[in-house]
Image (cartoon, rainbow, N blue to C red; front, side, top):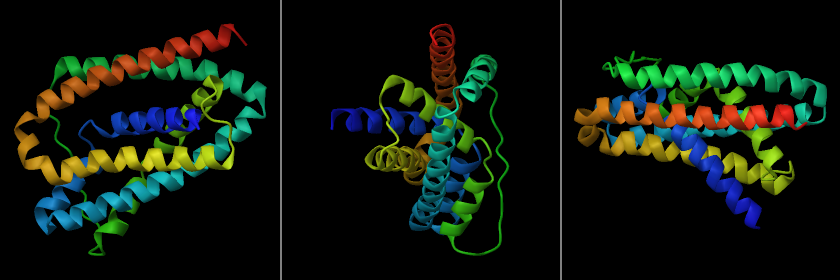
Length: 209
């Protein structure tokens, strides 16, 4: 039971932090709220979160396959070192530059907000690799065992962490709008630090396999 609580907390936190920086999904959640009302913004956010949970399920089974093929994992760990190093530098430089980010607003056919949210989340190609990487890390830490309840908790935490950020953008965007630059800068510093931590953990795993 304890490991499920830890799994929920770390996955929720990882999903939350990945969604915080202003981007396609959260800014469109705010846009939907402004143009169509907060209820539509929340429905849009539910659509995004539903697709994130579907992608998280796919990510679990990909990482499960990788776990059963140690040779593949060893290669991926070496690639992960480069990826985490690049992302750490990228987020740090983004925080240092602190330029106001202009996010492209996407208008998709006039269907309901739920399916628009699902569609926008589906075109985010980084979600599945991100959650696959988390799965591998959590498994190495003993926080996930690829059992039914572990998978359920992981998927719900991924969806919940995403939805909580989108909900804030939907409901409180008018209050946050003037603080977007500082908000983005701080979140980028945090993400850069997170990438450094993941980089160090990955290097440790490579030399202790």
